[in-house]
Structures are given as C-alpha cells and as structure tokens.
Length: 156
Image 1 (cartoon, rainbow, N blue to C red):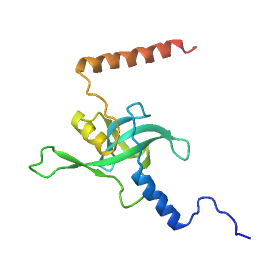
Image 2 (image 1 turned 120 degrees about the vertical axis):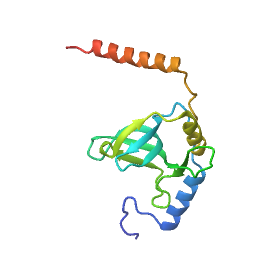
Image 3 (image 1 turned 135 degrees about the horizontal axis):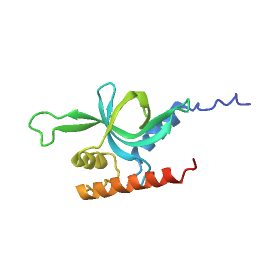
C-alpha cells in the first residue's frame, strides 16, 4: 500500500521535466491580455519592465502581479540604445510571474515606446501601438468621463 499523499510534493525528475516543458512552451500574450505593460521603479532602486496586473497578497491586501518581468539596466557606451533588458530572478527561481507588495513599489511609469517594443518582442507579447498626443488626450478624457459617470450613478 502506498504511503500518504502530500499536496504539492512530486518526484524531482518529473518536476524538472515540467519546468523544461513550460520554458519551451511560453504562450504568446495578446494585447488584450489582462494588465498593461509598465516601467516600475522599486523602492530598492531597481527598474523593472513587466505586464502589471492588480491582485491581492496572501493577507488580502492590494498587490501587483508582475507577468514576465525584466530588469532594465544601463547599456554599455557605444550601444544604439541607452538600456538593455535582462531576465529578472533567472537562476534563483523557476517562477516567471511575481507578486509584488505595493509597499515595494515606488512608482509606476509609462515606458518609452522603443522600450515597450523590445520588451514585447523579448517576452513574446503583442506590443501596443504608439499613441499620438491627441489619442492620449482622447483616452484620458474618456477615462475621466467614465469615472465621473460612475461617481454620479452611485447612490448618496
């Protein structure tokens, strides 16, 4: 008779095979996937690029899920771009997505369009088209109007 089954415990060989299979078959994320691509300044001073999704931590407090994060580093002099993207936590954990407590995040920034394009290609995601200033203004006005209407509909 086999021994007790422990949740989450597997043979190391099958776990290693599963991790290798996941690395080879990383799915393409469409533009409409949940979250948006952002540049993140951590309180530690690190800069990360990731698809940012709102979630909660284990205590139910608001947090962010970083999908396919990459560290933004300064490039060597003479390179065409002033920065380069490096895998985040590679070699330390097989996890590709990380939950970040809001206290660890100093700022969420809008990234440069060239940085977004390189990040999207590197992480196999669909890249949003660059918006003109008029399109950004229209989107901001639409978001304001929607939030204003939502506030007006709430009963007092």
